[in-house]
View 1 (cartoon, rainbow, N blue to C red):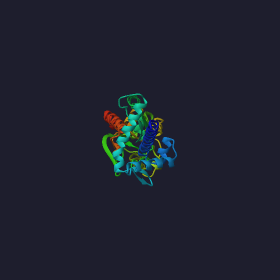
View 2 (cartoon, helix red, strand yellow; view 1 turned 135 degrees about the vertical axis):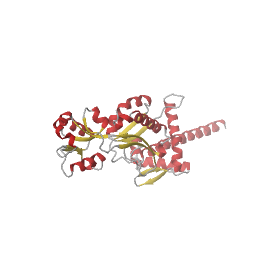
View 3 (tube, rainbow, N blue to C red; view 1 turned 60 degrees about the horizontal axis):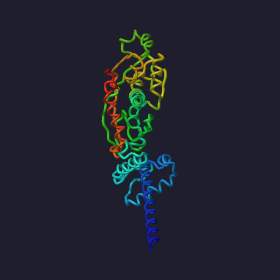
View 4 (tube, rainbow, N blue to C red; view 1 turned 120 degrees about the horizontal axis):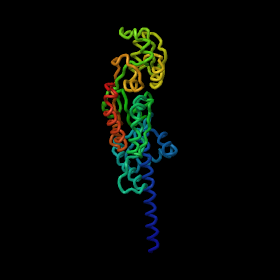
Length: 315
């Protein structure tokens, strides 16, 4: 009888262990889909097949007796119940990481954060400060998306964004942080060549560097288009860094952010052309309480506020 009881206890313990294992596996699957927004991206991150990942989500929903996601053609969105469980799932993840590392205290935030922003803010503001952030939060991986024309928080292409366009829809929270100031700039050589025309305020004989057709909606591109009045620019590009390099080479005038143009040693022709833009921090509302999201958001807020005058062009 004693041997039978021991076998039954062993069976029960093994069964509980197996259940604990798949519950944790399914929780990891839940976190991956919630963070990525699609099965395909989440499956790639976890190195699983899409069918396997889908079964894990369905199994977790069945176990919890709750719908965790709304399945849409554009991807998976958390339900209200799913949002309520997201932070608890992250706490489980943090505990697992702490246990694996042998730490008895709660671990630092871990995971990937997709940050969408403009190229000028990425290269001129965020990247120089990122090493210090990485030292403080070594467990957080930043995925920087600078092609913000295709990054949509409503579609969950990114978790949070630092951008110059105020979102008009989607379950997002936003905060206005600063103003990005723009002016008209050129090289000193080009400025010397056009010196006789400077007082007239006319740009009829000036060459302009501007954006290509795909970025023609940008305020800087629209300003140049109005000034040219049908004339062709000397150069169009799809990159702000290329425009700065072209202005440095003396090709013509370009509408550029003050802080980048001044740091490149360019000369300001007109400091107030009326195309300044507000800078907003935008974050998925259901991710706002995530520890890793809060760490990145706080970093961006502090960084932007510290550089507010520099971004506006007042220093």
